[in-house]
Length: 285
Image (cartoon, rainbow, N blue to C red):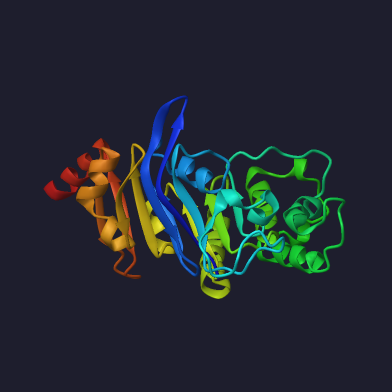
């Protein structure tokens, strides 16, 4: 089991800092949701800990895992992620990004099998566990009946599931997901959130997920990190972070927070002008 930690990370684009001294801890067996308005730095922070974006300062380290197959680190030690080879890092951390390009001429099974690349030699050597892992990834993402279809024939939601299956085939200890419910209809949004929860609970994967839907974050996450303008302004359980005053201040709109009476689950509601008008009408009737 592996934890991933970002300590005091600052990220800049063209000299301007967009993430300011952010710290984040992704713990094995726990789902951590990153939330905040557009431009708050959620995706930038996630991409930085995935080594797709360079940090101006700070550190990103892996903790308490077994050494990677290429022997570039010792077990049970804090390992600077930048010290790992790309292959070793890819055996430990997988990222589902937004807006991946659609590879033409390939079938679903072929794209999912991309996730096995870190386990093959430079010249495409054998991967004895690969076939079974790919089959399992196809099953859990609901792609079993579509495996022979070409990916350029898929809807956005189907393609999103293909890329998720590829990440699962990578078999990492840490899984990073950047707005994974984008393009998915309600059924697959719910099933994906259930799968994220299963990965943490049953396989003890450390999951970091960027979500825009606060209710989805409250439903799936053990911990929530709330960002505003590149700064972590709150971190804790959903109940601790999702307060009406705190969310309203960050999002710049009134957000009510209560609990669903039938499930007891925390829920949020952004109140716009017409919602307020409806409340006045109901109160006067």
